[in-house]
Image (cartoon, rainbow, N blue to C red):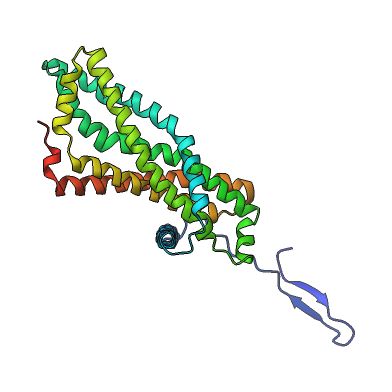
Length: 298
């Protein structure tokens, strides 16, 4: 029926009333999302980064303000992270030192007959770059994800809410020991990574290319400086703080049950990697600008 419909109005009127057909609803908009949605997404990312920074600052403040109720948890978390990360760090740094700067760098130096210069290369390659980088990746991928999953499970089981009901500060009791443990363990793991990375370079220089141990160690020690070592330790310690802040925040803000925990772990490791890469670029650039002599190989 396409036209107006006439219906009886009853005995009181004795006539017919005209009823208009219902009008069609306007078509739903089909097309790209409004321009404001990307702005909302960018704002949400900035808000999350700000929340992570605030948690890190609060954890750092509570770590030096009594009462120190987190000491036992700090010791437990320190040994737990060392146990989980020690073997992957040793394995990764040894074989990466052997393969990338060791064999590849040895091929280049062997062309000019100066394989002993491989020791100088490892000051830049191992101490300054790939040992801290591998340490950060391993600690984030092994220790950080375990922390995020643990806190996420506690959040799902409402254990964090129970702490609040008991009048306990979840940041002081849970975040602070993990924050300090990751900052300490990452620096310690970096020292181990430097040793085994240099050992991988020694294996490449001496065993693969036939150089002498004295030549390799002489060029390494002549280029090794205190700013290189201190910069590497400080950088990896800050890597640990970045990993702790990201993983603890993601774990404590989990939503959506077990599926949300898995999603938070994935997001935490990705954000930790991005934070490490960005901070590594800024820190290394600043170090080379402050100590230009570290960029010379002799």
